[in-house]
Amino acid sequence: MYSPSAAGSADNTTAGNRAFRYEVTGLRQSSESDVSRYDIRRSGSVYFTVPYKRMNEFMRRILRLGGTIVSITPVGPGVETNPSRPLASSDSSPAPAAAPAAPAPAAKAATKTVVPVNTYKPKNPFIGKCLSNEPLVAEGGSGIVQHLIFDLKGSDLTYLEGQSIGIIPPGNDANGKPHKLRLYSIASTRHGDNLDDQTVSLCVRQLEYDSPETGERVYGVCSTHLCNLKAGDDVAITGPVGKEMLLPEDEDANIIMMGTGTGIAPFRAFLWRMFKENNPDYTFKGFAWLFFGIPYTANILYKDDLEKMAAENPDLFQLTYAISREQNNADGGKMYIQDRIKENADKLWELIQNPKTHVYMCGLKGMEPGIDEGMTAAASKFGVDWTQYRSQMKKEHRWHVETY
Image 1: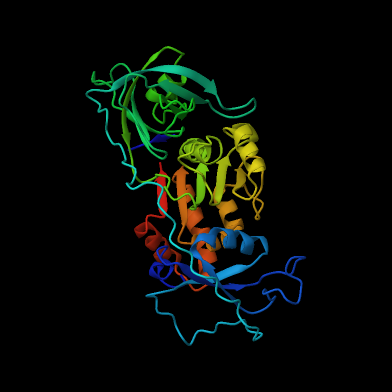
Image 2: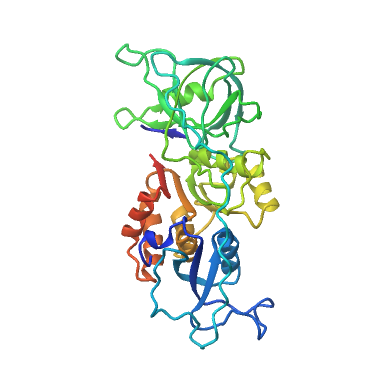
């Protein structure tokens, strides 16, 4: 992808506390819960105390049973709770006994990963080689989108998921000066598609449009250069850059991804790290949900891999498409990613209240207002101002946006 250039405050759901009290409503009856001894009731609020290490498991359980999480409140040493708040459901059944507080999990490493930035600058780029250039759009799709792999052997360039690299196209601009670099989101994990720490991959769409002055077809300089590369061709690389879209190191984090077109690039890197690499340095144990907007089925980039990962990891990964030219929204119009967000707003709101949930948005800037509209409607059901809540998520570094 090309990149031009609580109900209650969040302090009440800080991940550092060892246990959290959930208020839950609307849990449906099922073969699992429809027994007299079960601690779930159909009406009223039910309260659960959940150890820190079981939060993701609990969230998935509530979603599966159709419940709504009204609030999350920390409990434990040093946390003052409201003594007037009821601890049983409205039918006066006793609340479940609090689970013992879990010990804080040991960190995998003593130091935090260092984020590499600007190893190579425009005045001194690394000249790599194109290893492969493969089309991603199937027959019947629109536009040209390519998956490119570059050889980094002999360089000092390392990167992390969510970063970008710069590409300097050859030649000069209309003023006779060398072309400026363009930034593209990296589509591979830090280990590269070959898992040898020696490559970097991009997902590039050829930019094309009609000139408003002449009506002539215009093609993007850098995107056309990249889409036409052949194996063995040189490519001038700068970077890496970017800290906004980094994948959290917490393996238990929930990752919500909203992307359009080549905005899939950083999410491909995320998902490959979660489900394809099988590297001992990272084992994903959270929940990932990708909302992917495209015009046609033929434009679903990395379709086979995405659907295989979703099929093999149903409890960890959910895949939701918005195919604008083939699907209709609730009003009979074209189905865009913001419509899918609105359809799933309640479930998303429940997930977002979890302090371990991160939201990522990448692609066309036009998707932002629709997503905000859907989340505003969901949050308002619980008396929460979405704008303020989103601002708090940004402060907590849980809301990540890279749009253009």
